[in-house]
Image (tube, rainbow, N blue to C red; front, side, top):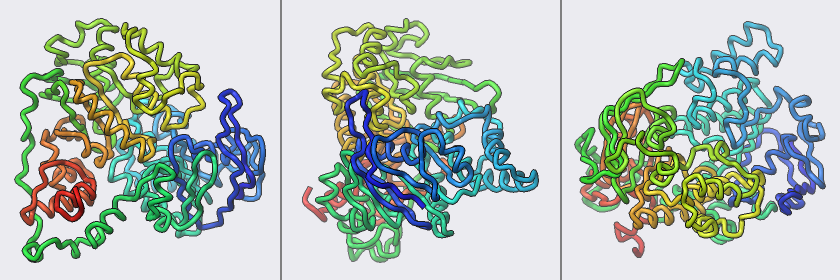
Length: 552
């Protein structure tokens, strides 16, 4: 199906060899996951296979056709479905309905077959409510879901996916992973780049890339259980494998959950539900009152009665794709103007601040950072941000160093990997020396080691008195940081809780319209047998340490 021989890709304008002598063959009905640290060459490999970039050496053959830049769509349209890392760049039409229909029309199908496939794909991904939404107004998660729907609409022989579940909530993630497995089981081929080790476990074969080379090709469970291999390649063990090793039973098998003699007959029970257990900070840095906002030509609305965010406080905002998390972030950052209501920054109405003064007050790390880069070099981009905030005393080198991009000043922004671009977007926020930072899916595209480094950075920012708001779908990431969790659904806040309460009761996740997260279910089990956890972490090692199963 796919043959790659001695592939080498160089970015001459950056002096980088992104891929070096990579060779492999993927057969029909294989499900191959690809993992590796940021900058390892994963996205470059996908782009080369899809004919989006040239290569200096080697050969790529897909379905018997040699791949050359610019010929992929002409030679293989309808036979291969592709979802790239940057979701906003794949849209051609004005709304979701026409985006899906456009794919089917180009296949030359009879109208009845087009209609049948359209209805089938809309039902599969539950897209009925967003069919008439403009594609550029979708959340990042919904953008990626629509892209995957379009990729599957042609009933392809091969699916090539570059981090398709980034920005996507738990419900859609389960749907997507289950469908990928069924797709491979039906005799078709899946190539799936992911930063989530637990997702890679679903595959039948695993590639590990590092420094542009294929360093491992084997069974996922074997590779992801090899601590030495993981450490050498800035990866971590899937939390499900870690849990099983620490506790002696699989996380997925609830009937085996058993910690003490007393717990054998006990059953987990939910804590008493509350919509607002957390009154918020006594002296808020940001206050929201009766905030309303809606998009033109869309039924979606934001309606926030009351929300206070404190200085130095880390607050997580969670909810399903399209619930309003990103819109709320843009409103607080002053990039959207509300229809009514008020936002106060340090007791001053947001509208009273000038542009530069507001940049020094609040920085936004965007969900899709590519939309904000000026370039062409990393230094040029940060210099623009520093000047727009009027904060010339902030060091560009220090900002890059804090995010792990030391020495990247001269790098061309377009040559950065997805994870490196994410780090640059965070450095762009730091360079303005803000009082408050809003992170929208900040861990997206980061390798596991970089994600852990970001956790440390955000904690240090909070210790410095900088307020932090994290909007996202990755509950494991938010659980390591937030002291408080705000839940959203349909543009409204449906609860405001302490992190230990939220992460110990799966009912709150269900109330947002999402399936339970297994580690939340386990924490709820512990609370039910009389072992409440005083922290919000979903990390099996930290929970085991608290239970004295391993050294703290």
